[in-house]
Length: 266
View 1: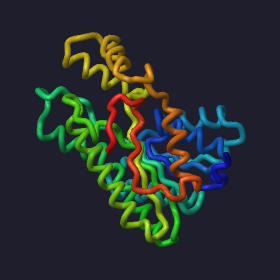
View 2 (view 1 turned 30 degrees about the vertical axis):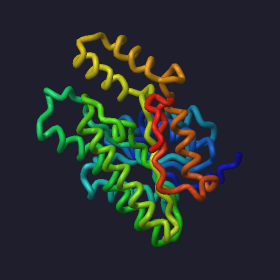
View 3 (view 1 turned 90 degrees about the horizontal axis):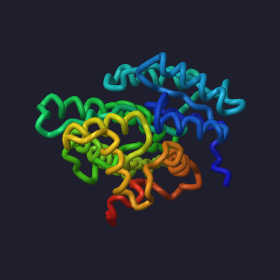
View 4 (view 1 turned 60 degrees about the vertical axis):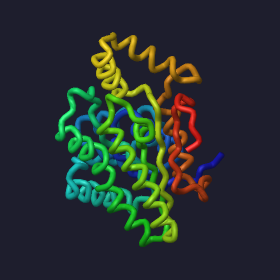
């Protein structure tokens, strides 16, 4: 299936690792031009090297931009630099930021503030800029990679879950507000996925229940009817579809990808 992504400019926040990196590789394989945004120049350059080696012919279609997306002015500069490299952004994929998983007895008011800054505002600062530009041009697609914790409360992920829930509402609201302007906005909620962030979650779970990290991982896997956790590439495949013209009538959707670990209809 041709997703018609060739030569599209795709900006991916959090694109140097995990799901964001998998999305970058997949878009490049489709012939898109990809701008990666992350905090670390070192991680971005490493990602550029890996992508250039793994995706044939992609070296000239990758730009990297270091930015702290918790700061709106830093997000604005990263966007301006990306536009200078590859022109208007056709697709925005947000996968930056992660709220720290914390057992409830270790929570503080600051932890809730930190979670919103790390996960919610890192998305909002880029979405606010890009969606207005897309609306003015009359076209564009945004996919927010959020997380299942926004629908199902976890004792070790309450601040992060609250940020995720806010991102889901923001995604649905932006879809309604900018649909008349030709912009589609969707969200993907991955369950446990084999990334570096998963390891941090397993450490917090193990500490809370006084078990080993291996036991925590085994317990998480046992809850998934498919019998395994997701791979980043599987999430990326869904992101690509939602970003493509093949999903031209899909907007305002929050798509859960947890292997039916939490069977629900809404």
